[in-house]
Structure formats: C-alpha cells, structure tokens
Length: 153
Image 1 (tube, rainbow, N blue to C red):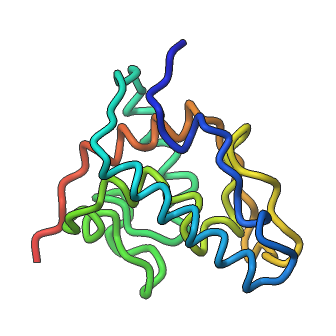
Image 2: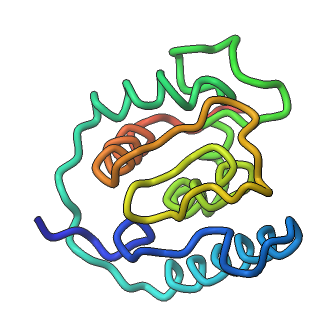
C-alpha cells in the first residue's frame, strides 16, 4: 500500500541521535521538528490513504484522553496544563502539530511509533505507561482528529 510522504513512513530518527544527555536529546527533537516543519510548508504533497475514523476515535479514547480533552468524549478530563484537541485546532499550524505529535515533547518519552521512532532513550523515563502505535493507527488517529471541530472561545 502506498503511503503519503510524511514523518510516519520515513524512518525518522527520534531523540536519541544527538548524544546521551537529556539536552542533546531535547535538541535532536527540536531539530527534527524544525526539519519536519520545513518539509511540511514546502508544499510537497502525496496521495492520501484511506483511514478509519472510528478506529482513530478509539485510539484517542484509549491513549490521548489520559492527558488531553478530546472533543466531547471527556469534556471534564485531561490534565489542566495540557491543551485540548479543540484548542490545538484553533492554531494556524494545527495539522502539522498533530502530524508530528510523537516527536514533540513530552510525547517522545511516552509514544513509540513502530518502524518510525527509536526506542525511548533511558534518559527520557516514561512517566506513564508507554504507548506503542503502528503507522496505520497513527493515520487513523489523524483522520479522527481531522474531523473534530476547533474550540470556540
């Protein structure tokens, strides 16, 4: 199955590429995020694959609602300092943020995408049960997020 060209199918290195220090790993995440942003704004596009919105909703319910408010499924849940999905969708670059969420802090310490990210470095201890997702599961999650409404403030 052909996949769109994005961070999920490029074997993008994770935070462990710039040394074993926490600073080096954080810098690697930001460098990778910057590179991804340049790619995303370059206008390169590829055909989309069919994703399962309902499966994405279940992934969001199981994993994302631990920290985020996700639509109407947990209006009074989440962690207070963590932005809701609706709030993130009010940002001009919301789509890009969600597409690379797994490399944006604090996600590298928790989320592993099979075949894309490296194993979590020991210097980034998991503070909750680690989450392992397949590329298809991430695509399904993105399809679900795409249909969520932005928050109205």
